[in-house]
Length: 259
Figure 1 (tube, rainbow, N blue to C red):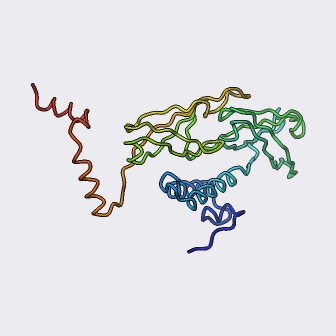
Figure 2 (figure 1 turned 135 degrees about the vertical axis):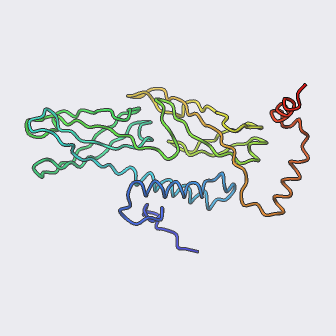
Figure 3 (figure 1 turned 90 degrees about the vertical axis):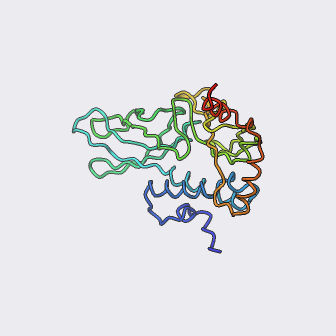
């Protein structure tokens, strides 16, 4: 069995070399998250722990702020820079350390507070932190794309894979949220594309306030890689169900037969 990566090395945990690009980090996280997700390995404590380590490593690598100066004309009123932030940091707001390189080669460190609920592309003005006659610093906030959630104002949306037994009989599935693991209650007889609304699990308005909702779209997942005997048992069980258990298909057959 390969040696376990050091607990404090996020690159090693994701199987990446030091200095890997943002896209490489994102691809590695998506692959590992899909492979280790607790819903694929119910009751497997080791894989659940690995999933938590992978998620923490991804958050750690994406939290390192990067700021760079945008081109600006001499004598401009503001000094401009960009700051990339995490979607999860917009729940309660977060502080970032900027490392700025000024036009004359000077370096400056600055702590910037990003308020909750900020929209992508928003501008923050920091008074008295410009250079020369340009006294203010203008920061364009760019929100990084999240591997699971899509933002729609205060609402978040995501797809949740649902194993066939859970879709048939109902159950609870774990979903890694922005502030911790969420338990999604899937109703018995869940349909492909069915939407569930988790109240208060979205984002707050700019500056703070009540959080919006998280809209979860169910994606039914059929078992793969079945052995021949497993496929045969499943086929026998499904074939034994009467036709009325498939009402939409029964209606279609009735229309095909005609009056």
